[in-house]
Image 1 (tube, rainbow, N blue to C red):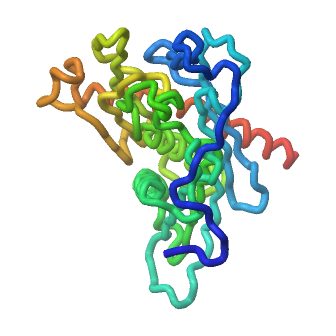
Image 2 (image 1 turned 90 degrees about the vertical axis):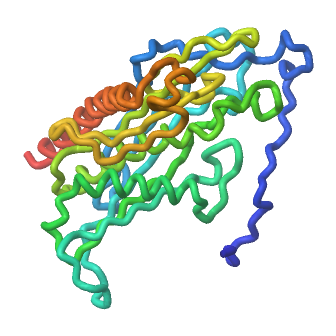
Length: 318
């Protein structure tokens, strides 16, 4: 279905040419791939704030820092650095359903996830594609087990997430044929983890009763290559696809620490008992356990942000 109200550009968008003095054909002057400087069990710094949209029932903003190559001395362009993650979420409701809607004994949850057109290096369209619909389905699954829906019969809650800056699937140098494409299509895992965390903060800001606050966490099995030789796979928390040559498998969970329950689980890649040789003897359970540890780190930031918001509201009432 096409949008007839706009004059859209071509579906396969093109990137504007970059004219820079340090983008030359000499291999010594080509910028190097950014490397992970954090230990494998350390998460990126996270900023989370609620109440950013006054017109909504609840809202939140989440940002993860963008990692850069510490050895790079070139006067960098913003587009050449590794992308971070910037999400904004608004919650509308609970509000009554239309009179024509059938009776529902519990609240109707609707999720909508959309990339901004400028969120990634490849320009996104105005209509949602399959990847954005998949993110919405996973987000709805993660939140459905959290909200106490019986308290709002024949009501609806709408959760809208806009991805202002998305995680890149691979390093920008791979797009021009200077690297492998083994890390392609992995950025959506980190995006979903952030969507779960920011949606949980917005729902709590809206005052909707929940059994617990859900936090998202992601872990991955990565393999580095130096001079054509593959190293042993490493298990890392909060992976950045542009920092790794190859990602073997990744797992994202939506975790409830208070109840020790997982509301959503998504595993992608070669992992399991049959593929232990290719993944460095990393089992499915070990990968999921590390994703839970990443979710616990996000949960601490989430709780601190909600406490800060609650204290600010109490000061205004005094």
